Length: 436
Image 1 (cartoon, one colour):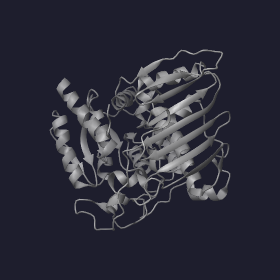
Image 2: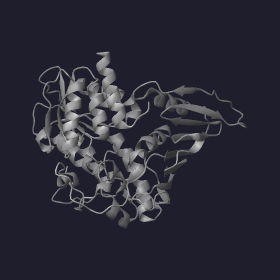
Image 3: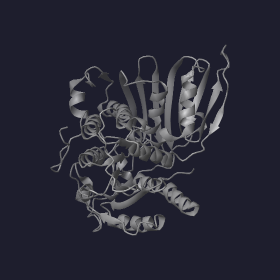
Image 4: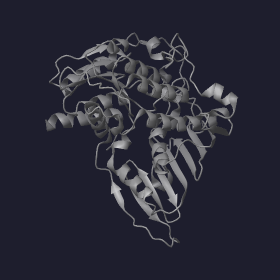
């Protein structure tokens, strides 16, 4: 068992690029004690989630779906080795065939961002519980629809913001909430990723015969296949995603907002551009600074590709800057730097990461399903949708070139033209987001 678990961890970490409500009806329609899972999208985090799922007791992954036949074949063979007790793994190129199966209890949505909302909603409608990758939706309107779908179909939905299941993140927020830092006026969130580099600009081409490119596009605008917009690099194009802001940003902004117990910002402004790689294939900014105005504090987002030397000598993190000290939190741990002139001294703990957040997130998800207790989830769709909305606001401020303001009571932008253009993602190719 230990050998199997170690093998699973190695596969999961390698593919992820890691170095280290009331009203729910009884919904556990399992035919046995075993929960049967299917994954839609088996590259990147879709595969990491698959590997994490099978570390949980009495969970089996029985089906895989992907539009890339070469990836699908490879993952099936890896899963048969990692999960030797399951002799048959069904594979599909059409995710709807998974939704049609009554013997599947849980669906992992690990597809590119532009698919998240539609597949999560359809999976809930088909009676499945859902683990959907972050960001929850690719627009604010999609996020709202996802919440409505979860409520209508009484499903349990976990968003893949796995940092919420790591103990050191929880401990750091407990310290922030203790008040020892004093009045916190500014939070800083930064993401400097030296290894991230878009692909070169290349000519459009015919997709390989093992790729169902039309299905990959789905609700996104029709475009000729281009290898520099595909697989991992979809995230640098507005049709499919939102760059670093909706990639790492939802993880990091999540903790800044949680730490301050904040809702949505009052206003957002942003500046940035293609400063690092102007010659490469990308639309989203590789350098971006966004300023979020909240009621009693400011939040600064600072991101840069091609650079690792971020604030406090870290390539990513969250800083809570208080009158008595500054708490710095990242995936490696957290520490407190005392303010030298503060009258009220603070303790200066330092904590390192000791757990596997993805596996812990899956344990939490499966536990919520078994106990029919959605309130025990570490990242509900409401929480995932909230931070995805905050991240989208930063991108909207950048794309519009305007300081944008949000009316929380009306749940809309104060500028009607901004709301009309950016609130809801337009769907194409005959796809429609269901009217919940």
